[in-house]
Image (tube, rainbow, N blue to C red; front, top):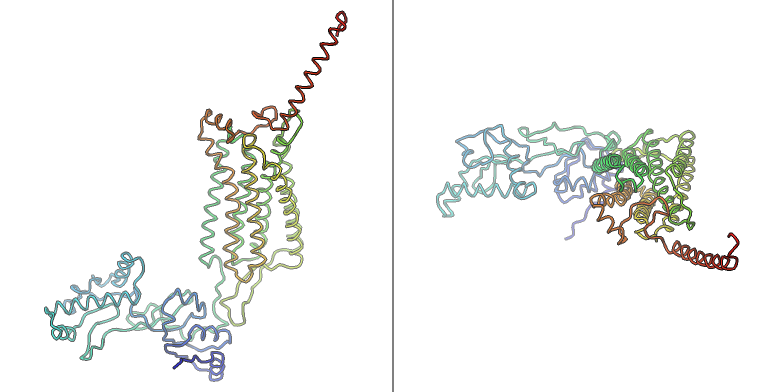
Length: 542
């Protein structure tokens, strides 16, 4: 025979007509589908009593049923680690056979739970408790019978009366256990299984009547999700790393390796990365008006500083090493600071106008009618917000494109000329890649808020972090090398400290070599002509 599940919608419709106070169901019933449909159709009973294995495992309940399982009462737990054992009692042989009861104040079940978890790596649950109980019941029967004869062992079991985690183990002539008690529990608003029966074991009073679906607490709030707390911890670590690197750069700013890396722009890059990291704190699954505005500013200004500083360094490399003239010149910090200033200034102007014309607003989003627990608060984008967002994205896309153009131009420079050409180029490509991923997530991730949040936060952490590490880790390695090692590396092409002028290059490029060859040939020609003139007019002063 095939077990046919009732049509849940029809069942809920009938129950809404009857309006029962209590809904009671047994096993082999789709309790998850029933509860979620009851919530969807706004059927409200005063209590839901469901004796069903589908509610035994909290992790599975939370994943498969979710908030609809809250306030449901069920049975099936044979023990709980919060249960306390009785005091030592010689009559019940507790001291000898119930190894985890000590003095009545120690939570014996908890001690058993912890010892089991230490040995096997997971908590015992019902199965672990049953296995242990069978073990010491068997031990008790064998020791009491002092025999391996089946009849003697049966007599010992029939006379048994010892304490266990779920009550007293005592059996009738049919082998039925008369003394144990199954626990009844109610899932509270925080997904904690609270024991509501029997009375000696309760951890919370039975909630009756349960709140209606429309009255239940929502899950939104600051850092309510584990994923949010994990991301916040990672962001904190990233901020500490950037701050530590800033201190390191400033402390060693006079070292030739750090001077070659242009410490001012390294510090600006690190400070910009910290602002980008901080945007994660204000771009979470729960928000308010302030956070809707602040995360825009932190992300845009942080990106402007980070990318502007990288672009300035790229531009400086290009100006020095792509210049074909042999004229000696310098590209100073004051000549390229306006690049960073201009990028950040445009970001600030756009953000200021955006905030003044359309202040960010947060609104409550109702997932479905009567399902208050699925509601969430999010930033709402108006048409004006979208216009300014597009303007900001177009500007940054232009800056990115121009930066990538310069990266392509300097990418083929030999390492012996300028070691940072490839590392800066890699940093720019990395930052660009993760920014593009964030945009894609924002466009297509609206239906999966938590997944979108996790991916977006990871991108905001990895983008600046990988870019910074690609720039500074080689510098840390170079600082451990001696001057002789640096010179050998310089000649091999693996390292060269930054040169500020073309005249300081140890190995000019092909274009420069060609120019030098032409000058040598022209010089030889002029010397030949001068010799001829002197030989032809010996008495005339030349």
